[in-house]
Length: 163
Length: 251
Ligand SMILES: [Zn+2]
Image 1 (tube, rainbow over the protein chains, first blue to last red):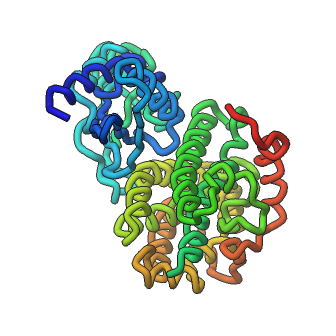
Image 2 (image 1 turned 180 degrees about the horizontal axis):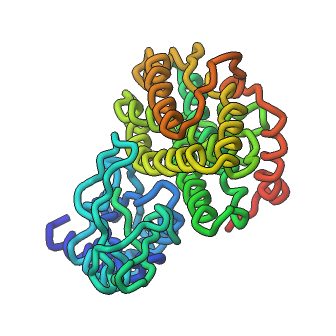
């Protein structure tokens, strides 16, 4: 497979969106780890965001559908766990899309896992940009999000939490 | 370590996550506040995801064509290898938080070590899971402090929950022959070493919560060998009855 083929396939894969955050596609999210061919077969390797993320099954089914449309039946979607997905793999473009969609994007850099109660960096409100915000709950409407509120404009919002 | 022993060891890891995940799922729609309802079920989802990865791998290793669903839904209580702690009933919110706190501190230490496992797939699953366990541990520890250092009533209740569950903690960090074999094979860490860290970390939070640290007295054990409390059977009956009633059902 040449680099142009790969770029073309990645371009096609941008059609596949995250069913829970439809402004993001699988390439933006950094979950597509590899595209390769083995004989006639096309193999797309993805990595899950969270262990129990129910969107992953839908995402692999959708990748299969899109790839079959362009390349026929010989398509396989493989899942690997290593190296584990991190929010650092979200592209800058994806961060901007999240903010526009009303979800505060994760800060960059993985959190220090050895700390029991780590200092939390301020999260800016995606609506008004104020950093005068408060975490309501570390758990939100999906595995990847925490629940915040803005003390400035009083809007509640989701924060894509950093892992 | 034989393949059968490795399969058994993986069942311990996978069943802990599966059974605790199922227990937490029972809170769905019953949480004391909307945020906590969502938190407990989020944690449940993470745990079931971890169980899925581990049991899928266990099934492949066993080589008898059992996938994660077969292992979850078509084994009886005596074939489960989870520790007794995780099958204990939810009780009130404090009981659930205490159970979670005692487990999370163990799981965090264990997965931290399993990232260096000689088995690449175990190491990969651990590296994935520790990210999730890290915020589970923070959530349960924050609640222990809030309840312990809260009102007179919340203090008394969470102290009682910790006291009641303490006898199930020894099993977490006391190795048996299989744990030792897994350690010798480089797959798993030395549990006796984790025991010291577990005590140190758990004691630290309990102190901050102004709670008394229970004595390490008589410890219940048996879950890892398949000898369970009566609670597991009832739980499995509920968890397994649909796939058993309609064994070939597909989504
Ligand atoms: Zn705002």
